[in-house]
Amino acid sequence: MGERLMKITAVVFKKDGKPKEGRGFSKEELNKSALGFRKALRLGIPVDLKRNTLHEENVEALKEHLKNLKSAEKPKKSET
Picture 1: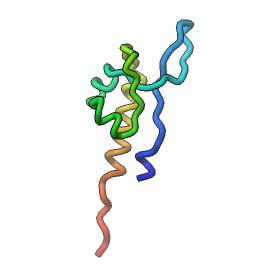
Picture 2: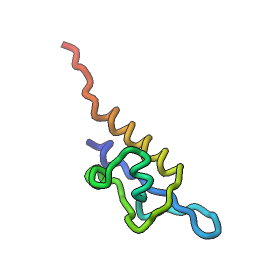
Picture 3: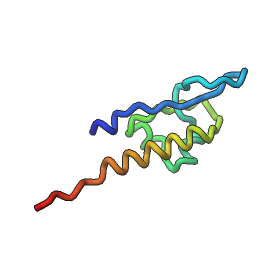
Picture 4: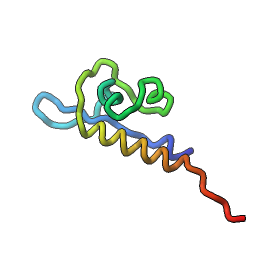
């Protein structure tokens, strides 16, 4: 359960090209990583509805986060 509370942040770029921490992931980034808007909110992933941009770094971060969540959910076989 502790894995689920891991913080994930979106990276956006300012006008001068410098990266900064964003408010959340855009709908485009969620769609590209095969994650729905409501499921993202349910998982505690921040969503920024005002943003329309698509950054590949954020898509990769989402995919990695989802992979970590799926591996944490798999129950380990107990030795009996």
